[in-house]
Image 1 (cartoon, rainbow, N blue to C red):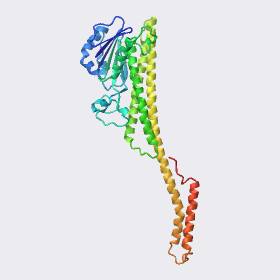
Image 2 (cartoon, rainbow, N blue to C red; image 1 turned 180 degrees about the horizontal axis):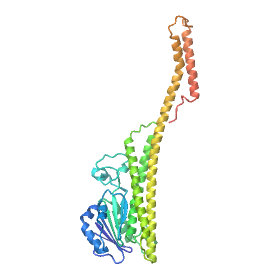
Image 3 (cartoon, helix red, strand yellow; image 1 turned 60 degrees about the vertical axis):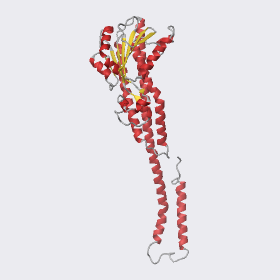
Image 4 (cartoon, one colour; image 1 turned 180 degrees about the vertical axis):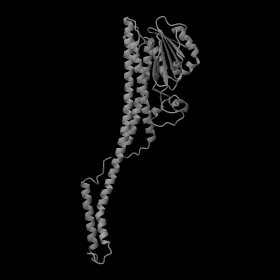
Length: 378
């Protein structure tokens, strides 16, 4: 568990739950799911001291649920956001069967195929309880997003100039718990954008194999798993979009103080919420484009195979047509009649053989000019 006290542009980190709120600021209590369960009573007591309220039991269950889809809920004192992350799991964790438990893309202990990058996508949920001056976030045990954002937050305060106008942007210190929650969610969404290059490269390689006429593609099981994983990613992003849309709509019901500072901070929350929605839409569009490209490559593969089969059948048909009159001549002179023209002449065999060769050559040239025997380019 890590506790951050944010006051203006100053951030202080600690490991113990505080007894009181900072005079002009808020608290961020970040803990893993296991630590949240172990310290639940202490966290509830601290929240009651600091805010006068505790987390509802159903919301505690949501924060502890490792399989919950992205969703948004609220009470009269705080908002609850559960957001499934799109993080890259380390290779060692991806190879472990127990590491697949919290991944929505596969079942526990299942042998996965498909692009290696899909093996490393972890979709464990991250929960946020957003109070007026307290943010409680519950992460997976190996959540790199929390550590990365905490490091960036501390670094921004150490090298930050209070007069820097960028303090209101993504590089500065969040103004309130809701702003911090949105920045962490945006950081999680942007994590998928870092994976798309490797995923696109792998699928492009498969498309090239599918369309190459001399390649025998035998990775159908991997391609099927990739398509299923992409479909599940699309459904996951749809849940993310629904949850963020509900959060954005709830901002309109907030009671805002009439002063300019509060109005401006509320407007910034709306802008940042729309920005997160736009990032999610970009992920959805990219996933759908990958699905469409994969489906198109499969269809083109079967079309190419069908064209190759048609070329083979056309060649065989042309060869059959060439030999058909030759078989007819051979059948006529093979009849068991006593009197057949040329049957008892010494030169009949060579004349017949020459005629058959002329017919075959003529028909071969005719079919070649009509491109029935033409070789298709690879």
